[in-house]
Length: 298
Length: 223
Image (cartoon, rainbow over all chains, first blue to last red; front, top):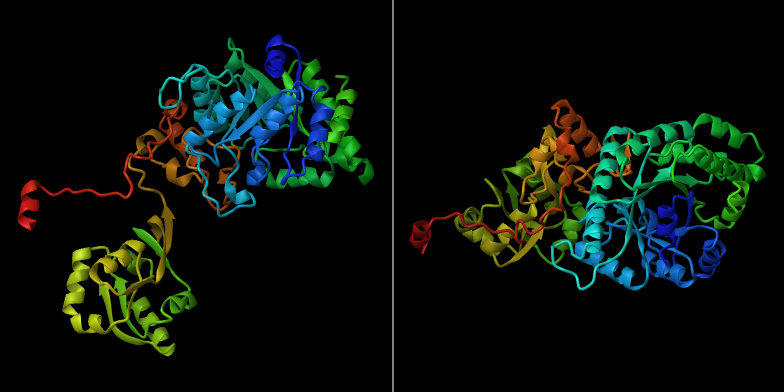
């Protein structure tokens, strides 16, 4: 059940994937993706109303992954729930056998499909990390003793390409101090930049057992890469990759993106840049096994 | 200052659909500065309502509409008009509207939407910098309020949506966290940035807020 944590703590190169729950009740494709990936990776993230768009819940899907024999990394955002609701969910998730939590502040409602909703942010990511840690120690946020503590492996995110980077670095340091045990980064493409960021991050986490996973979003076209450069804060696809994506005919672009992703996995692995990778195929989970094969991981 | 914006005239007319005799109330404070309910706007609405077939029984721009005793005094002084009015149209913040509510039992209609407590950047440019959270934390953040000026109101640093000094939610607005970082850095106080802040005590002010600052003697005198 604690496969992801065990993989992280074993010192092996950790690989996780991501499941995006559907908007609705038709779970056939999602379940297919779970079954396709659950044994090929160490854990599967489940997004929580990703991009502030209403979807099937991350707790239910995380539970499904665990039930089907995989390990889930339960994403929890602070956008939709106050501290009572979040802690309630954490206890429920623990009851359902979920053991990994990824603590996020969460995209603002204004980027999603319920733009008039009231955003909450009673907690934010650093406080949520603290709250999970407290529950692991047997206490709720208010300091009341729990009848049985939780046993969550606590994850967080960091954006190595954030501009400016300095405030982001300090927030990363606060997340480490708050008790984050593993990090998955926002999508990284410039491996030199990432390597420099990791040298800094290793310095921060020295002496602590904090695992760092490179976030890899598979490029599907040169247009998608340019779109991210223009519209997604903290994501930067360098010119040489744009050129590489543009160098092949459109119908081969996805394959090129998979090649790049596999190359980056190998780069991280062979150079001991980080402790693992988190692969985000965003709706194209079918291609993940091929990427893992191309990277020689399976 | 309470920043307001006049409601669309059609919406005001719709609210007044069943009323003929209208008493218009403006405000000499915030709504005058925001040009929502000052003398000019009251005169303008008066003309438009008359054109729409309404009878304006009186207009008053109160010194400050949110002063409830003052509103009662104004309506006492203007008793005849207040008695003939079917409805009171109030061009001020929601506080002013409810002040009029206290002073009359008739139909009271808001003529403006209340937006935020704002600073005047320059004439007719207003920015929200304080959200009246009940426990001022500005000293922790270089006197730049993350509760108000960060779109998420988060307390421990920028989110992933920070974008070259601007906010993902609105690229016209500065990322409060970049401002806070730069300020604390310039003061050589980045240790403050590194402090992990607990969530706000949202009950620091029990809502709805009420303060009675009167002494026992004053209370006795009033009784």
